[in-house]
Length: 117
Picture 1 (cartoon, rainbow, N blue to C red):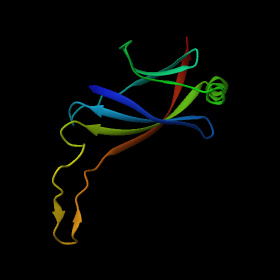
Picture 2 (picture 1 turned 135 degrees about the vertical axis):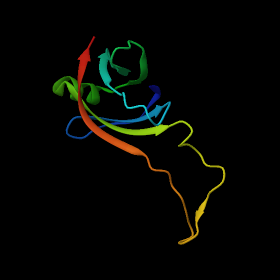
Picture 3 (picture 1 turned 180 degrees about the vertical axis):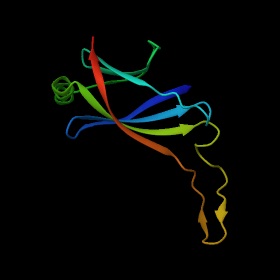
Picture 4 (picture 1 turned 90 degrees about the vertical axis):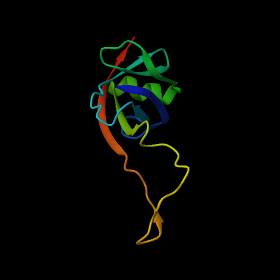
C-alpha cells in the first residue's frame, strides 16, 4: 500500500505536469491507482477507493486554466520503498571502479483524468 505521496513540482508542458514522489510500505506492493481532483484552485491526489487526500497543492491561474482546458494531468512518478531507499549513512563502494552503489528507483509516467468538485 501507499504510505505517503509528495508533490515535488507542478509545471505546464503540453498539459499540466505533476511530479510525484510515492513512498510504498513494501517492495511487493503493486497496487497504486491515483485519482486526481480539483476543488477551487487546490489540486489533490488520492488513491482509488480511499477518499483521503494524500497530497495537495495550490495551483496558480495559468496551471488551473491548463487543467480545466484538458481535463487531464500528466503524472511523472518516482516510486520509493521504505527500508530500501532514503539516505545511506555508509556508502558502499564498488571495488572494481571505485564508485558508490546507487539503489534503483522505478519511474512511471501516465496521463490521468481530473475530476472537478
